[in-house]
Length: 128
Image (cartoon, rainbow, N blue to C red; front, side, top):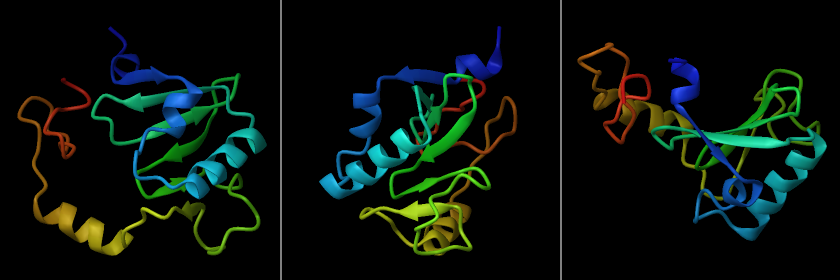
């Protein structure tokens, strides 16, 4: 069994753009512009539903959607972004990255089967 394939759930473009119901129309427009710019042809989400990855037809991952921001691999972020030191774009649902990481560290739990950190859902992306 392919472990990576078992943790991915395919999504349509429409599903990916509506993945976070709290995204504003402006957020969806920014995501859509980058989907077009990077020629994203497929989307998948993790089993825990914590992120959505956009890939090109060649299978290259070119954008990662999070509830409050979008991250791009080095060199693929839009040039007109506000923070040129970060390869990402904040969306209207963005919470402080520092506050979120501190809160996540405080309640981190691990899978008893594989010892990877569990996502907030409590369901291991690797073991299920």
